[in-house]
Length: 255
Image (cartoon, rainbow, N blue to C red; front, side, top):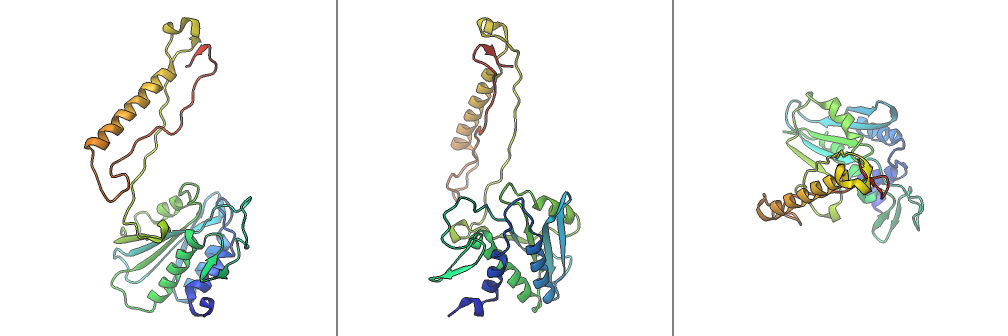
């Protein structure tokens, strides 16, 4: 049986794959296609574009009662590049073979986008106690850049969602949550001088090394006595130094 003729979500997925919405490139044509599908079911949607580049945009739509916390289906429309990769089928064309669909973004995450849009269309025909909502973003793959414009657009206009379902594949298994993240930059300032007189000056790299050693102490404390959640592969919070730079020459104390 050809799923493309029996499943609206698969048919929509075929269409979405054909949009080469690689991060940092336009996705507006894809977003407008989704808008058209939603409008066909009587669902209004709003756009939240990049103020500097309106060819890249987020989309938000809701169906059901207003003023009630809803169930939010959240996904991104961008995909990672294909250049230099040994594709054996066209990456921006859905190829159906042996019960699978091949194409860039089928799993991450246009497959979910297609299912979410189809669910919105179905929900528009039913009485809902809570709204079903859809949020589609751009440039997620490079650091969740696009969704920030949507968050600012929606801030203070809607109740916080009752539940948010994010369609990342996670090996096709349900993940009930993930750890948050914070990134910090520390600038260690010293005093430069010739290394022959090093004790007279202040070495910024030495200070940075002391900071890294302190971070490792914090990590040990978190592992031994910090909050734990055994549902995670690493059941405690993690700390690490990811990038370190400093110094100009071997014979100069770094400032």
